[in-house]
Image 1 (spheres, rainbow, N blue to C red):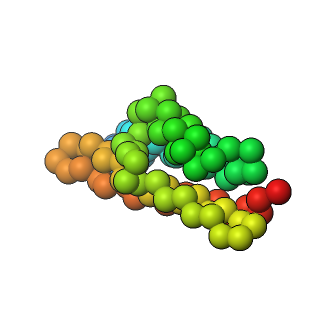
Image 2: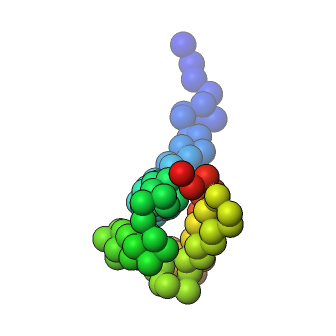
Length: 120
């Protein structure tokens, strides 16, 4: 059987490009997934602290949020936390920006966690 010289399997450019895209996706995931996990943990802390508003005052809630932010190494300060009580309800809001460094640029990932709960 005779083979045509054009059918020697020289379609490797597509494989290289696909592999390059895969490596870029893995690198992006490597940089962003830990930030997303930390943000989810902070969101849960905000929800938990809002639920405990009946037994804790605003200063305690603020301290716990800032303690958790320090533990998670998130750039949250006192100015990023807003706690409001209205009649029988509390609203806790935390907003912050996490810089994610990539070769050539820094992505500013913005987060806002809000929890509203009745106070018992």
